Amino acid sequence: MKFSRFSVVALAALVSLHVPVAHAASAPSAFSDSQKQEIGSIVHGYLMEHPEVLVEVMQELDKRQKAESESKASDAISKNADEIYKSAKDFVGGNVKGDVTIVEFFDYQCGYCRTAANQLQQATSDDGQVRVVFKEFPILGPGSVTASRAAIASIRQNKYMPFHMALLHRKGPLTDDIVFEVAKDNGIDVTKLKKDMEDPSVMDTIKGNYELARTLQIEGTPAFIIGNELVPGAISADEIRKHINAARAAQKS
Image (cartoon, rainbow, N blue to C red; front, side, top):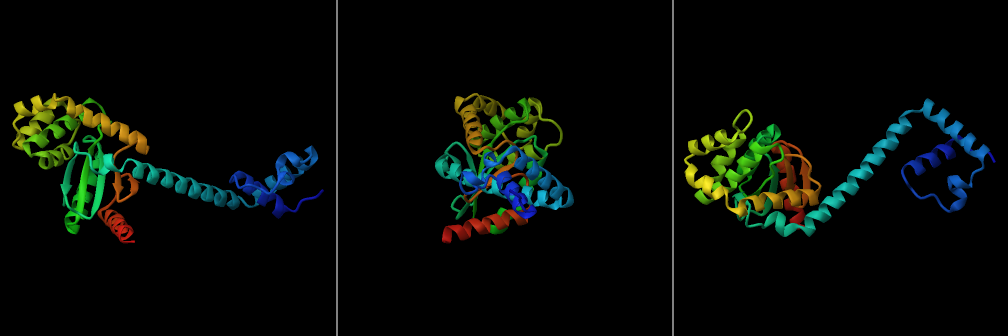
């Protein structure tokens, strides 16, 4: 049995993409050793002459993997919606009655989070109808954990947002002393802050965010959930606006 170059390369591409080929007669196991050798030789020769085929195959594979990942993320978001959007433990900023919600997972020692915070603030202030949920997600060491504990505790003094932004824009590594210095500079009663930080609910909030991030397969910061879409990494104000508009359009439809 002889095989055309086209049929062999097409078969190889289908197999590499895990696309089912009709019936056992077309399966590789149905070929004799000599047929397998011939196929291998033809495929190798064709791909050496046309390496762009491999690029096309990998692009299609990436496309399918991305679609599968997005589908899984969307499903996880739907199943954990209350914890994501409505947890009483998280600080909510922006327009608390806004029609679109953005959820941000961040770390105070993450440089990308600092950039993202500026872009987020610009996009949401321009819009005026966006609700923002801040998920403390300290993953860059003890200084990050202290900063998040202090930020959560600062909610009790109604100082979260100025403290949050000040911590993000503080250059260099965060130590306990620096965190409390920033708190004092922003009008926070540091003695009360330290006491409130020891409340078990503070660390419970952080642990809950760790677990939620694990469920959503969030591994780095920043990471956003805009509407019902997971958007990892720092993005520009224009990109944030596009996601906001898409979420708003999806709600209307």
